[in-house]
Image (cartoon, rainbow, N blue to C red):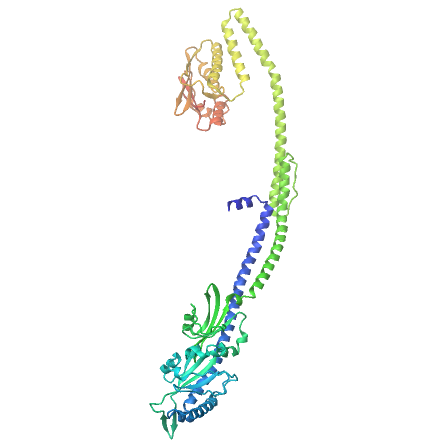
Length: 609
């Protein structure tokens, strides 16, 4: 993920715009296509489910019509007087009589069931004989009859006996195994496997308003009507089923009555959805069986209680959707190409001004500040380009001003070099005068000349604003020496500066204007006994210097005006402004005085080394 982010971050802005636009266009299209696909599949499933459910219901209704008609015929058979009289007396033992009776029974059965072409065979079975062997119900020559001595041992007979005269419907079974007739095991399975309707006939007739029944000792024959499972293949509506679908008829216990697997039609269906279908009676649902999704449509027969099932693979229902999916991919691909083209054009339109700006910045970076970009119609780019052009103009003006300033500096350096000749000449002259004074034993004049020379060299050579205090003190002492000679012993100077470290840095000549004011304005009016004290100490993390004199003092109104920023004086005002500019407002000068007695000027600056 990090590598992908780094790769994306290194892309050109135009490429990023194209990617953003393509995503902006294609993602909604893909989302809409997916939603449409899901909606379409849901509609298709719903329509298919409704259509197939209708087929199942119609098939079930059709089979119920046939089965109901057979039930009605069996009820009619119960009240048939000819049949009643045939079985009201003991069965004959003579073969000829039995054959004649069989013929009469066959005629009676044909009367009621000959029109039902779906029936394979119909018989009246007793423990002594199976009647109806001559009934002509089918066009097939094969006719399977029950061996009489195997009747009562069969499960079919037991269920019919339990039903006590009601018709039962017995799911598809192997006729040979049901009635233990091994001679039929090699018969064609299409005829051997049948499902049956069975009923113990308890016949009765009404004669002259009196109901006549068989005597209690009479054996009730069992009506056995056999159907081949191909009966369900002839139903109307099967042609409307979907390719890949399968029709099943299953009992509520899961016994298969009819299925597309003809090899072994007597299997039992074991499926997770069967219980739900039995409970629901009618409906449809999607289930998963052995990893395959299936649509199951089912309806329960009102006659037999069996379920008619239509099983359709889920994928078969959506067989046409892949084609739609393919077309959707084509459409998305076409729209993607269109979106890339449109994104390329839009990104180009947006990034062209940026390209021009990058080219101009490159030229400006190479020193061509005359580069101009044409104005753009877009508001944002118009402002950006206008400001860039203004910046280039301003830079060009600054370069021009800087060039002129450099020229002036060069001129000043040349002038300074020229002016260096004058101080050099002055130093030489002062040196000659000094030697002349020494030659005439004028030591005081010599000391004044040395002090003046020291002051001139310090002033001319030292161009720095911040200097070592030791250097500045040497210059100050030279100045005070000259002033002491000037005023002929009018005052004396005391220095209390031992507490100031020798590496301390101070503003250049910051004490001289204060000392000069003390001498000229404070001490010059005295005839003798003047005292000038210069002291310094560390206080609360800063340095405090004090210049104190015992002169005439200063009036309070004058003191207030001395330290104002716009004061007209030069000495104290100059030092005050320099200190505040160098160190800030918390530093500066305080003046205190008493008229006729003394004046003290304190200077506060930070400690610097």
